[in-house]
Image (cartoon, rainbow over all chains, first blue to last red; front, top):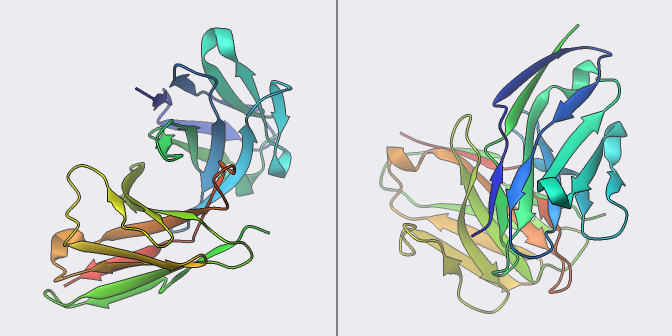
Length: 113
Length: 116
């Protein structure tokens, strides 16, 4: 069965510092992987996705993620965090049934000024 | 592109009444739409998957007679919470997928429901 693990519930970084949010997935075939961001009281915005090809994918707002099949990971990174990046981040994988998304529990990012 | 809207953004209703939430894909045709429920500080819980012109597929534990889903057109799906009770209060989010070969889901801004 498909599943996604985000081991960090809450991460705090200083503005300007680098960021890495961890995501591990469990899926038997080649996964379709996504990172979404959610601001309080809002829907989810797609940051980036990986379907195939280059394992380092670039997204919006300066984010990137690297797919590592050997580690079943798809970690999200940003070299310099801005205060506006404070939000909830969800990693997700497409399952095989009707294109259903399986979400991780989310990582809350706090940015100190 | 790929914008999804929801209406209303928030609603307060009395216990026992029904509430309808609309989900629209504004600039693409959505063959499949999904309805999620999100509790505070938790991840999204898939409630049902709806395909245009057919009955919705509900997840285990979701009452189909309680949460009525209609996907009458390629740009509109509705979720009706029937005989709402306080425990139905939640944040409801829809998403839409452009086609059978398009795996990306685009999410609406969500609807906050409060049942008094």
